Structure formats: structure tokens, C-alpha cells
Length: 260
Image 1 (cartoon, one colour):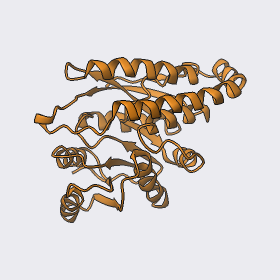
Image 2 (cartoon, helix red, strand yellow):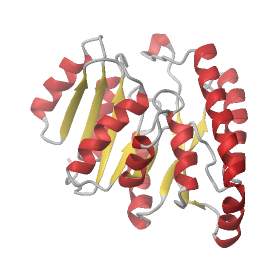
Image 3 (cartoon, rainbow, N blue to C red):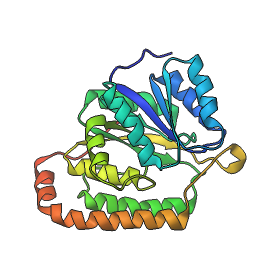
């Protein structure tokens, strides 16, 4: 069991994640501590499973929300408690096993080497990735990079990343959006707008099908409309911020890339 960190914790939001949840949490605990899981109003009995695991492991904390509010809301609930407990950074990862647990150490190392930076994963997809998701991702990432004048976001939808906790908390508490599938791209864009440097770290990403225990709550029409609306909102702000963004781009270096 790794020695617990007093600055960096793993924060995993979870909603009816299925059989991949407990192995994902256990894999995280094997590589880092502490690990916090926010159960976002799940109805699949996962809260009870996690609480049983918590009773056996003092480095695991389980936060149970009474109703489903979305990924961003779950992260916000955990983030508030993390900041109150004195943590300066949170690594977020999905609860469904898509993110490689072996990426935790290099992500944390990159953050510890440059604490003011936003550490964003660059997903390395294999043959399990659905084609339609990859096409939609390219379009979404083009807009994310446009909104930041190619400041280095790379992939705005990949949820494996390390945030400086205080700036992320400020963004979430001062904006009413970024609560569901718009969370990852919106907060990345807004943190870049706040001047945070970006570090890109490559990481494998695996999609599991239903037979393998994979669960997805992404609804193509509903959530694509939500994300499209988000980019429309941010594009308006982008034009307002454009002079400042241009000046910032001319006076700073581009994103650093770390090996996986």
C-alpha cells in the first residue's frame, strides 16, 4: 500500500457503474492513497459495496450523494471536502475501468513537478473505441483548442487528469454549468483561460462492452446537444476574451508533453 499523500488525492465520481467499479477502486488504492469515491445517487447497490471496502481500508473514503446530479456535481462535492481537508490537488478518473491505473503515478509525478499546472491526459485508443465516438471527439476537441488558441488542451473530453484544487473549485462555484457531460471540456477551457499552464501525459484508454461489464450513460442526442450548447456559450466568451488570450499566447510557452 503506498504511503498516503497529504497534497494529492484520487477522486472518482461514480453513478451505477456496474462490475468495473470495485476493481477500478482497488487498482487505484494499490497505486495511490488516499482514494475518494463520490457515489452520485447510484441505485445499483454500489454505495454499500464501497462502504464495505472502506471499512477494510482506511485510505478509502466514500461520499454518498442522495440523488444523481451529474459528474461535475459529484466532483464538486468531493472537491469541497478535499479542499477543506487541506488537499491541494485531485486526480479525477472514471469509475468504469476505461482509464489505465498504471497512469496514476506519472500523472501525479507531473503534477508534483509543476504544481500550478493542469495535467491533462492524451488518450491512446485501441480497437475497442467506437468510431462514432472518435469522430465526435475530433470535432469537440477542435472547438476546445480553438477556444484556447491551441494552448495545449489536446483532448478536452478525457477525464483522467490532475487539477489544482483551488482554481477548479473557483470555476465550479462561479459557473452554473459544467455539471454533467459538459464538465470535462468546460472546466479545462476555463482553467486555461485563468492562465494555468498545461501538461499533456499520454495514457491508454479502453472501452468495455456490455459483456465485459462496461456501462455507459452517454446519450448521443441529449449529451451531444448539451456539449454543443456548451461550445456555443464558450465561443461567445472566447471572442470577448480574444485580445487577452492572444497576449497570453505571445508571452507564454506551449503545453509540455510528458511520456506515459
